[in-house]
Image 1 (cartoon, rainbow, N blue to C red):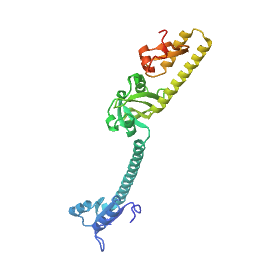
Image 2 (image 1 turned 90 degrees about the vertical axis):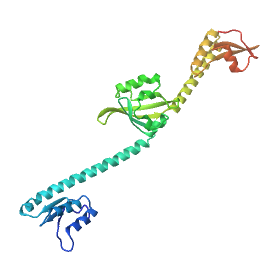
Image 3 (image 1 turned 45 degrees about the vertical axis):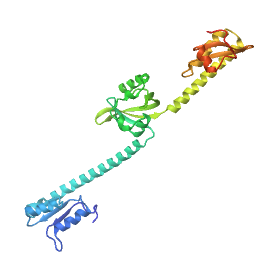
Length: 297
């Protein structure tokens, strides 16, 4: 028997060659959901109990009144079975869709999160990797705890207006081991479990930002060297202009503590512009045998 061949099966309790209950048991092995109505001319309470224990849908005792109502009983059972079948199909489709979405989220190359009331409600493994911890440890944590203090204004704006005209944010996040990473994140307002929330995805852009900073520093240094060449060729206000060039060069070098500009003279090198202390500069260049410090700014 094909499970889709019938809408409903009605079985008499007494059948030639095989009892109706035996037929019911076989039907249920083939199809656990199809409506089965057991009909008996001499029904007893005990027999009805046995029928229901074997998963009969309904038990009907033969009578004139019951036969008149059978078409309505059958129709109601068929409609109910169709409704349950559609419900099962929808539930199966939803579960399949959820499995697909869960797989996409869990295997995404970007960090994905849902933020609600300022705290993480859903995160994927990649987000935990970016923050240097497990995804589970992020759940319930306030988002602002992961952001560097200098970027808190960005987070405040995000929480107050997730639909702002800045669709992409860049920020530095503090990792569990104390290091920091540059991230780029995009957000959209959603409803999650009946409440307003923010859906976001995060990319680790640390490598890109480091390259951008290196390129900016190189550009600044090149510009300073071009200015230095121009100054040397013009000979105008040399010491003052050299100091400005040195400041420009040092400002583009992260962590610079000392720097200087030397001009080659007949007796050696002459320090004409200084950033930091002379001692630090001498320690850096490794000696003063060829350096004549004629003046200190």
